Length: 478
Image (cartoon, rainbow, N blue to C red; front, side, top):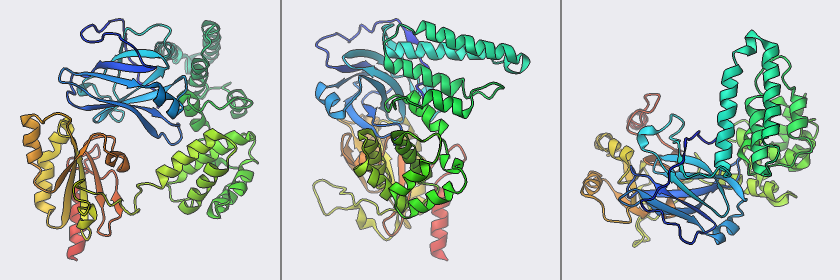
């Protein structure tokens, strides 16, 4: 997923941002529509698992200001690159940005009314952004490429020769403009963005698969932390299992079924675009990631091969990606036993499993989140209707300051069992809660039935959890 286009404003926030001693990376700003909400800054460990690593968090104050600082120790411990992509999250909203070591950023996290349709991703605004900064350069290039393509795309059918000539002219101009730039990250970003956006356009004379492989992968280092590189790689090798020649696909299945890493690797080694052993292992992990939830490849064999790569690969980056995937797939998954959460820190005997025997609808709630508040009435009606047959449990995020009267009144509407946890409590990561409200459904044998489960209010397909509840209750009556 690429970062949303943003407007770069040459405005200096002067109301509270006084530059003092600056740590290695710092993000300050304003999120005026999210007072008292938690804001987090995370790195992305890799673009195969997309695992997020929390680096800094803050509570937005009553005026909407926040300050996120990544210490030198955190940078070192997380093994962060000098430039890479990060993610800011507030409640259900998030935004991407690129950060450079020893840089200071001032941003505005926009109002929730300006959410895009892309999974609650918002357009971040930078203030006083220097023209040498990576965000400035990337945004400038993306705008240039998008504008250029929109201007010439009509000629793809109307004047094919002119279209090809214009594509070639654009590439030459890009090479000239960025000839003196020494940022490897930027140059790779530009190269693979062109590959993804321009070279993937189908037209007569477009680069062949062999051309693309030779230019973008053959004898090229793997840019693990460059999202444009990884987006291009995942596009080039998309559903690659079904592109394997001859009987290779069937043999690959057998290799996974028998948990044989070396056999699987030898099969992929037959492919002309997988002669680089490190690239081959990365593509192998991507195949296993793509197919894990398809129920085609055996899950036990998939996990064993990922575990073998984690332990045996000669490449540290491959071992890290494998470890992240193994943790992801071996964690909270549909059908797996649900973790027996201690609901009350002061009472170790107060476990979620005490509700075992009925289905459990777990409601993750944030008292200041507008989406959470909007669903409360529907949730309450649902609980009144099905509460005798299905257990409702609410886990809510405790505010670091006293609740407002409105927040407390809404919290009091929850009359079924509810338990508060600190915003930094490990429970949220354990349950993989990244947005609020969030729902999970546990079956009567205490195994995860659905995550995220449907909510009490309609989604984009007009589905709610009520039909699931009706079917479960009706089945019990039969």
